[in-house]
Image (cartoon, rainbow, N blue to C red; front, side):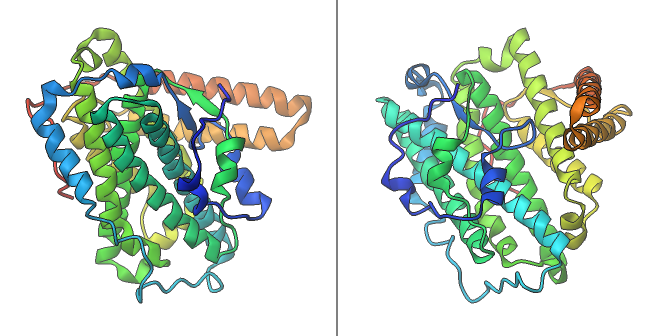
Length: 365
């Protein structure tokens, strides 16, 4: 589905900036590993009744309305970026990280803004108004960092050029809940590591990660509550299989994507495999609030198959660059290897959990 949502007007004007085509192409490209733009059945979303979670809902909305991070995303005296002195390989991978992060944040902004625009349900419209506000801030802040390097993404153009993927509302819940919670786990893990090792903080944007990731945490809480409004979303046999699918897809995508940035993680002073397992562990612990199944990331088939997935995507990339008939055949073979590896990951026995009665959590890492 390639239709661009309407109504993306002045709210995004301040985020738009022209830039060279290389990073614009990176942000616009749609692949299995790149952040996507989503659309959904907005009429179905508008019918959500939050009465069954009203006390927790009202508390979360009051927190979002208070806007605790209103003044956070502004540069101050601690902003001491040095793009000129950065190693070229690191700079390339760091820009890739920022473009991917900016695109993901702006994707959420576009989706949430459209939900608010299409709806008439006061509860749902208010929620997505606050979440689109936060995601616009995040995307704009990252884009400011990119602008300093002369490679800002034209976000206004992105809403028209990026392909939109249609997901049913329940798939939006599963995917976006995991995206927000894994975003929290990623940012807080980096923040805590650099808090202990400030000499490895090669760019000032990492100093802003703690409050930033708390926004991500709150957004995940909202989707946890939305899922609780319909028990079938997390209790039916079919939906448990879908939850398992999204857990496997999100975790394996993160693993492959992170291994494509070795210089970035080397500069941070973290082992990529340790970092990913730490993020998976945090995310899995948090997701017990609503998901009845958990991936066994200590299973003997887990890491070996993640490595096979990484190799398969590397072979697909090499085949794509090679081109021709030989490249096409190699790409198909590597794709088949990736699909078989995903099945091997998906069929790892899951850990069954009984979600708590009270769904709300507070960030503790």
